[in-house]
Length: 146
Image 1 (cartoon, rainbow, N blue to C red):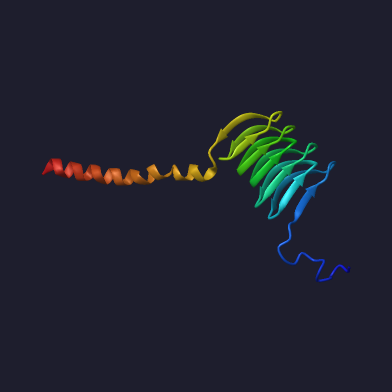
Image 2: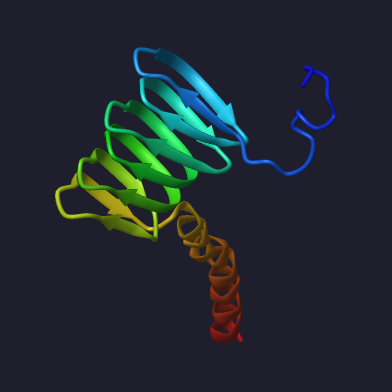
């Protein structure tokens, strides 16, 4: 099969996973549209559209944004995800913003959890209502003056 063979390319909806091998150290910001498996070390900011898998030898430190995070290694930092699974050898230290967190027996989490970021945006609603309250006060003062 040649390198430009129509059958061998990434044509179609094939699953792609990026692997950061054991012994590989990355510092900086990564942005991926595919799944990633970390066997090495990443320090910095990681943004994914799909799933992050941290294996036994994997280490992450920094800020992580992903659809799903599966941890069997070590994460230190802040995680933003729709679902997080900490497996029996996984350890997470820091802050988690997630609505679906599961920790297997043997896994550990030290830090704080908060609802997913989406719900925090909804909390801005009362500030938007503040100008409405001030207009009501003006109407009330007019009613008192009349």
